[in-house]
Length: 394
Ligand SMILES: Nc1ncnc2c1ncn2[C@@H]1O[C@H](COP(=O)(O)OP(=O)(O)OP(=O)(O)O)[C@@H](O)[C@H]1O
Ligand SMILES: [Mg+2]
Image 1 (cartoon, rainbow, N blue to C red):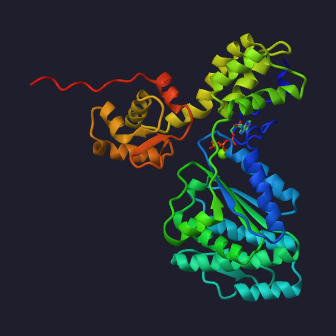
Image 2 (cartoon, protein in one colour):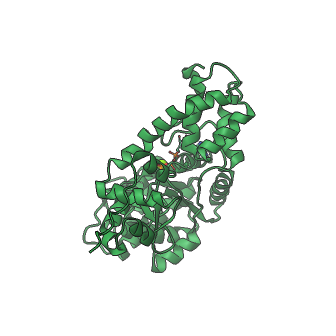
Image 3 (cartoon, protein in one colour):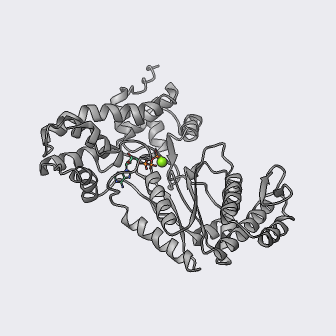
């Protein structure tokens, strides 16, 4: 059928026509924003999930929701080089500008922020801020950011609005800054100011200790999103086509569910290829069978090969040994065993894979897993497993 009308969205962050299976998270966010608007507080959300399960599209849906409620929103995709406190300060400045404060309110805010150590009001008038975290201790960073958020929240509330920060790839946030932001949000929540944060990231979001941890446990819920259930996956596949009066044969849907395992990236890619190959409605099992090799090829090159290219031979062998053990999580001792080595001998390889974001340490101590669903299956397609050579008999 005409590729111009293809309703599937197999690209990172691109909004699916049917955002299937996320009603619970959307409802939770709707309540959060609604309550903030009334001056009440509610737990914010840090969404966790593997690559390609739909974290970015969910954050985008949150952003739309917050905007439709009249909130100011600021979205950031974090990288290992980002400064979260820097970003939030810049956003705060932008938000203050959008709120168009009176001369009196501006003067009051300039005075309130004048004594801060890491955030400075620069310039003779208005609110222009600069941040310098060098040489500052965590307590000062947290205190200054708290003050800024309280001031921002207060003026936003006066204008009948609020601010939502949306952070993607939150696993990259530096721990000191993450803790400072949590402390600042904790203050903001205590004072009932309409400011919140919704974030998303890989399962290994920064580990928290001490006060920050106990605040975070109260401030946030940590929903995990993963592959879609069978009925949601079917809706994700069938829904977009149906909007254009194109149906699927029911056996074709079953086959697609089995092949994709409900993984959103697979659904979009398979749907896209099946649509292009089918000559008319309904899309048949034969269309899907014909689409699978091309869909797999595209998935390999778009999500798996780019990652394997970042790995050294030794790291690839490690991941191949993981795959040899079946589905994860994988006990590091078992992976080492497959390679005929001791766990400790492979700790640097493992650490490099963690640093590269190819694997992550699961909550259970001593286990790792792939950050991309079905990476193990890819490894099996990608290279053979070479068992360790036995020591020659002496
Ligand atoms: N609920 C959903 N229903 C249908 N398709 C979805 C859904 N969520 C995501 N998708 C599709 O899955 C793909 C991946 O989505 P997205 O980029 O949001 O994932 P992600 O979790 O942010 O991945 P990454 O960790 O790589 O950033 C996109 O093609 C998107 O259109
Ligand atoms: Mg994403």
